[in-house]
Image (cartoon, rainbow, N blue to C red):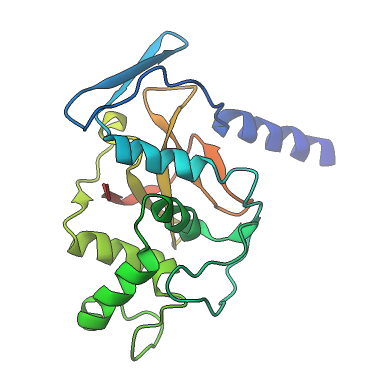
Length: 218
């Protein structure tokens, strides 16, 4: 029966894996439309150049972050990070945002310092903790909402552009990822860059779980 499990795993990977392609177009300041074709399907978006750069920065972590490690770690401040070869789903976004000059460790910590009661009370903390606050999905959801970066959740894949941030409920656990610049092979949508347990991957997983949030940070 072991070979059946292997075949099933290979089928899942084949269905969700995404191949990097040349986008064939570069978005302007965000007022234009970028498009590309893959397998006869046209993919379009209005992502700004910074948003597209965010997606590419997240994609660049593939092969570098190869493990999922949720351990609490004391970090430097600002700019603190765990070793690049490990991390959780939020670290994909944190690292990509830093590449664009935005340090979510600082941004979230400063916002929580001034509005601690506005953030989820899930961990029994009495004050902000710059080691971990920015690495928690509910806190990032709150931060983006407070920065007016929230968008409506929809089931229309064309609403999700490269560089957008998406959150999900995965069997009762929060998860976060970045919409990539890589088209999904099986439909009119872009793949997701995330770490859901096997390091940073680019996969066709946008609607595999319940979408709980949609944000456009850049």
